[in-house]
Each structure stands twice: as structure tokens, then as C-alpha cells.
Length: 590
Image 1 (tube, rainbow, N blue to C red):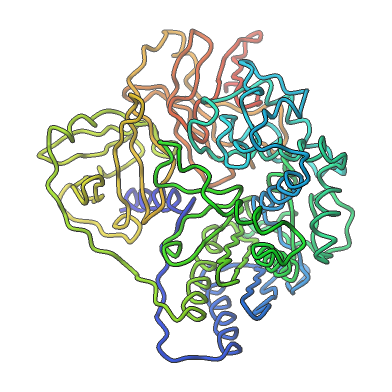
Image 2 (cartoon, rainbow, N blue to C red):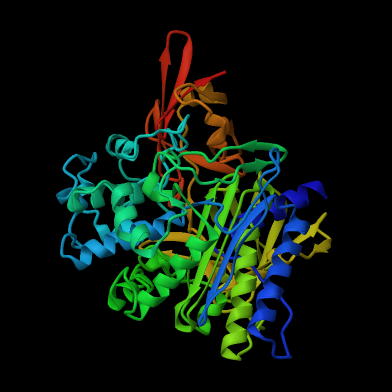
């Protein structure tokens, strides 16, 4: 049963990247706005208790103003300091929404053209195949640039820096690593791209990123309890982070424009209201046309992205999107986790940030529970909690063409085999085979059976769907959670492995970055049935298994396409030591 729990945990972790299933009771008796606020507060306190969340910041706004803004729990348990509405909590990648707004302000001024090559603005960019003349600001805003999602070297800086321009070092790293797929081919979440946008803002405005954000967004909105990066001189109380019993200060990441801000609940409320007002042409941030463009799908013409919707910065997928416009962004900088969701058409928004790693999915769950309640409260409509689809018989010969091995960043190479008019997914990292049965004309439901006999039920597993597609001659497997799609899994073939690769099997330690365990730990090369696999744990909780595609005796790429795949990896000897270079890291084999 322990292996089964590990399987469900992994599937749940994937699902949490874009979607979480929310179930809550319907309200039949009208309540006052004050009662609604009290209910939300009680719900927050209940979830904090159940999920053992140390500290939390929440802001809720609606048509009438601020419904709730406060801090809960501890920001420093050791000193017995409680959170309040002015305590600032790190928001990680929600920072990207500020960066996106700043870019669109400069677009409005005619200083940036969305479809002009980024290399025309940043002369220092010189990618191995000249992609700086192909990648555009539009691609960076929607994560379609083809650049590495995360260059791991100094992802977390070893120490907090007072230098607000430290992120501009990213250009040299990008020039070294290059792209991992053709720009524009698909969405692949990219922190590196948002660091470039920070440099772009500096180049065209003449103001460094940190100064620009403070002058053109924070100050006009009166956001006095917000910092743009961890190294700012501030008297603000910043929540400590908790990973188990251990506490730590807010980390500083190299990519400041991608995820280093921290904000209070009061400032979060101001920010959400300003976004909503700007959506209607009533606010100081952007013209209505620009804000609406940010919340309008920009990737509808990308075949691999079908079923996934993103605007400029904002993610636009959630079941509630069938009822009203929806835009969100989540943030993850362990042990801090945050979520922000806005329903602009009903002038409603919810923000939650926590400082507790064991409750990583809590902000997503809680924000969507609250936002759904608010939608029903203000619209008078009820959100459907489930759909039934007719189970169908699918042409078996058509199905068999999708047999093969698909690379998934969590499960590694997954083998799909036809068996008794069903498809079965197997992997060395999946302890129980997953059985796929026809669900609709294009998707399959997923079931697991303990010992091949006992059916196993889990809400996440039951909601999971698998879809196969062929695009431009390549075959893909997609995982769906409700109406959200997760990164594509490319079908790959077993590779001819040079004999030298046997020497590369083993454990590796990072030698060029302090505190490397916070970013990449348990790094090892392992041989599976058909492939050599790079295994590591990212940010302390994402366990990746990436097949290696050899290029020659000493160089390879990580197989597959999308986040964390396609990256360069290489080996060399230094005296009696074997050195591996990957994602800016230098690692030594034990």
C-alpha cells in the first residue's frame, strides 16, 4: 500500500501544477456580506488547523470592496510573532503578473513591440543558433520561447544580495544553454524568460526593474507593504518559512522578475482591485484593452497546446471559466506557496500565501474554494460539480498505433502497451500499472488495480484522463484534470547508448553552488530497462526522472519536450574525477 500511496502522491503533485478539484457545499439560504466574510475567515482557520499551516496571508475583494484582508497564524514561531494584514509573505511566481503589467505599460507607450525579436532590444543575447532573432516578447509573456524553463545554477542565490541587478547575469547563462525546442512550438513554463523581460523593461524604460515596479505599480497604488526582491532594505515583517520544524528566512532567487516579490494582504487587495478596475478602464495600471488582452487566450493557434489556455502572464483554465472570465497565477518558492485568482467580470479576486511546505497545495485549494463560493454568492448561479460522459468503444487498430514509450518528467519513460483491448501504462517509477479504457472519442479514463485485481479509487486518479495525439508526425500522450491539460509527453524510441555511458552511472554532488540541496538534490544517473535516466529532486519536493538521449560519447540531451526536458548534459574527466555539466551546474561523481 505504501507504493500505491507514492503513486497517488505523484499524480496529485502533477495535477496541482494547474488544477485542483474543489468540492464544497452549496448554499441555499441567502446570507449577508458580513456573514460571508465570517464564513471565509472560519474556513481559513479550519484549513490552517487541518493542514498544520504555520502562517497565512489572505485577501478577498468583491464588487463592494475588500471583503477580507488579514494574516493568520505565525510569521515567526520562535519569537511568537503573529501575522497580520501588514505582514508580508513571499508570492514567488505571482511576481510575473507585475512583470507582465510593466511590459504592457511599455507596449502602450510604444517602447516595446510584442512581435519584435528580443535580440533587437537586448544586444547581449547571442544564442547558439541565433534564436534571439526569433524569440519575441509575446513568446516570453506566454512561455513559448523555447528557452530553458529553469537554469538551476543560482536558482536560489547562496545568500541574499543587495544588488537589484543581480538577475541580469542570466544573459550569460542563457547564451550558454541556448534553447530546448523551437521557439513558438509549445507552452513550457519559463522562469528564465521572465528574467529576460525584466532586462527588457530596464533597456527600454531606462529604469532598473526594481525601480520601475516600485515607481509605476506599487507607488501609484499605495502598496507600501511590498518588497520587489529579498535584498531590499526594509523594516517590514517578513514571514519566515517552515519546512517541517525547521525555519528559514525568505530566499532570494537569481530571477528577481520571475519570482522574488513579497506582499501584505492589504497590498494584495489593492493590487487585485486595481487589476479589476483597469479591466474596465477605471484604473491606473493599464488601459482596458491592454488588461483584457492579458486575460485573453494567446495560444489558440498552437496545435500542441490544444486544451490549454494562457494569456499574457495569466493562466485562464479552471472549470469556473465556463461560467465567467477566469485568470490566475500561482507561486512556488518552497517553503512558501501562493495563489491568486480573479474573476474580472464579477469584480472578484482572492489571494492566499502560506509559509509552510507540507501544505504546498493548500493555497490553490483554498483560493478556488473561496472564488467558487463568491461566484455563486454574487451571480446567483450554481457551479456544476461533475459531468458524466458516455463510455464508448473505440477502433482497436486506431488505438494500437499509440503503443510505445512516452517521456514524463515525473514518471520517466512510460511504456504504453495494448493488452486485452485496453491500454496499460507501466514505468519503473509507477508501482502499479495504470489501465486506460475508452471514456470519450478522444480520451481514456485511468484505473489502478492492486495486485491486478482490487480496484483502487482516488478522487484525483478518478478525474484523470489520458489523450493521445499525433502532431506533425510526432505522437504525444497528454494528462488531463477536468478541463486542464498538463505538459505533453512525447513518444520516444530506445536510444543506442555508447559504451562510455556505463561510467556515468552513479551519484553526483554539486560543486559550484552553495546550498545546492535547496534546488537540486539526490542527483544520480541510473540505467532503466531501455534508457539511462537522470534523477533528481527539485525544490525539495518534485522528484524528476528524465531519460537521456545521447549525442555522442560525452554529450547528451534530456529526452522529451517541455519543462525540464531537452536540456544539454555532458561529461568530462578532471584528473581522476568525473565531472558532469548540466543546467549551469558542475557536478562531481561520488
